[in-house]
Length: 115
Length: 173
Image 1: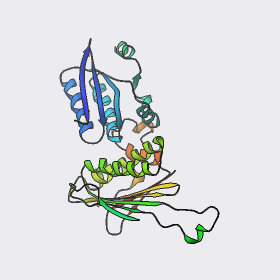
Image 2 (image 1 turned 90 degrees about the horizontal axis):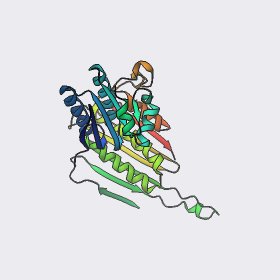
Image 3 (image 1 turned 120 degrees about the vertical axis):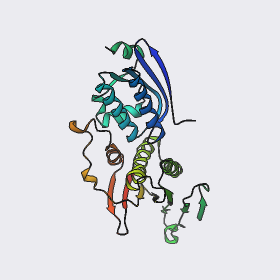
Image 4 (image 1 turned 45 degrees about the horizontal axis):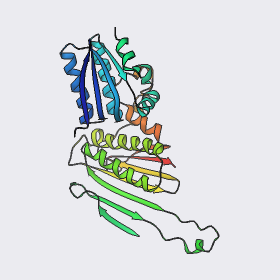
């Protein structure tokens, strides 16, 4: 089984990526990077990452989230995060990245927040 | 008791685990509250590839679980260990599988110590910018060392006279 499985849903003009597994150095980080690059190439720039089933993330994975955020912003798109686990929320708090990312606990609210 | 076993015979690196439980001091046995010191040490020598991170993390988890360390402390130690090994494997040894990472795990009374040694050209940890500062917040790297310092009580790097860098981290338990 892959380290990180990514399932894709389209809700209106927002692409939701349901992520299941680990975002760590190597396979997990590469899978996220590949998915985001493909969506941007297809012109899909409103992206919601559902992280409910991401059990583990390391500094490489967090770097990949930042890289995704920067790449999508550069294309005038929006990246938002949904359903952070408590551990991920703690990591984003201590790195002060919670001040950067737009984070939601409700998918409905997250979807409605896209411009 | 002294025990040595191959943890993963498929690995091309040596994976030796040593468990030492010194006999209680005979003099201490005569006291009302004899002190029995339990020391467990694991030494690992692994090739420089990404999978090594998981192997070391598994060894740490096993050792700390046996020592009765709770989930919260385990999370932070696990994170710091993964980051230290990731640095050694990818930044130190640059994923060159002919180079090895040597890891020492020591479960001591009241603390846990890990050393990670690489065969790289060395680096200056003070040159890594603080990733929480506004000007660095969107940098995609530099958070590994931050996590190590955040989750462990002591973190220090030293250049080995025979080459490479050793990071030593301690966590009070």
